[in-house]
Length: 362
Image 1: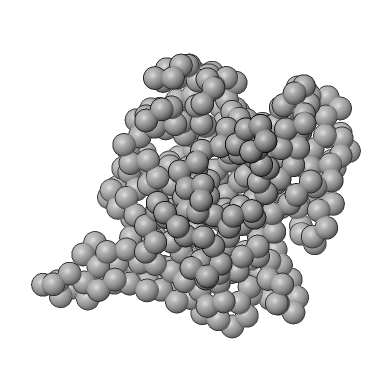
Image 2: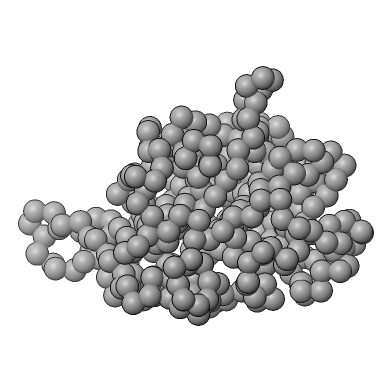
C-alpha cells in the first residue's frame, strides 16, 4: 500500500456524489425542498488539483507529482469568513468543504430514555458509554450517524460525545475550559469541512476550529488547547443493558426527522479500500479501514488494532498503562491514565494525523 493516498478526479466526483446522496437521505440541507433532495440540488462537485511539478508531463490528475487534490462543493461553508482561522495548525490547502455550517445538526441536551425502552435500537446497536460522577449515559452511534456531536451533561459535568462515520472515530471529552472564575463551558457544532476525511468541529463561543482526531483546537484563540478526554468506550446495546440496567440513552426524539433505525454509511463500511475524499500521508502498516484504538500519551502516539486488543490488552505508554478490550461494537477502554487521550478510529485517518504513531497490529 502506498504511503500517500491520492484519488483520481473521477473517483473524487463519485465519492462526493455518494456523500451528497447520504446527506440527501438525512435531510441535512435547510434550503432543500424535501429530505430526499440532494444537499446542493443540481450542484456538481468541484475538485481543485494543484498543477504538476515542472517537467512532469503525465497529465494524470492523481499522480503524486500533482500533489494533493482539494474538494470544495458549491454552497458549502466558507471557512475564511465563517470561522476564526487565527493560528491555523492544519494545512489550509488540505481542508475539504462539503456542506454548509450546521448542515449536520449537532445535538445539545437531547432527550433520553431508559435503555429497555429504546426499541429503535437493535440488540447489536453500538453505544458510546459516558460515565461521570456515578451517572451513566449511552449515546447510540445510530443517532450520531446523523448528528456527529452530542453536547450534554453527565454527573454534573458538561461533556461532548463525538463520532465521524467516515473514520468510525469516536471520542468523549469534557467541555469546560479554564478554571475557577475563568471557567467556561463550550458548545460544539459541525463545521461542514473535513481534514484527513475527519470531521472538523467548531466551538460556538469563539468560532475556533477543533479537530476530532487531532484531539485539540486547530485554530482561533484556543488553538493548541486539548480538553480533558474520557476513555472511549463502545459496547452493544445488549452489553450496555447488562452492565448499566435502568440507565438512559439518547433517544430518537431529537427534533429532527431521521431514520435512526439504519445507517446511510453501510456501503462505505463494506468497501475496505474506498475513501470519500483524498487523504495525504496515510501510513502503510495496516489496511486502511482497520479498526483500532488511537492513544496520545505525552508526545507519543499509538495505534492498536482491535484484533491485537482482543478480550483485553494492557498497552504500556510513557504516561502509564492503558487497558482496553475489543467488543462486538468497537473499542472499550477500561482504564487510561489522567491526561492520556484515547479515540476509536480507522487506521487510515489516525495514521494521517499522527504519522509517527507506533502501530501494534495483529
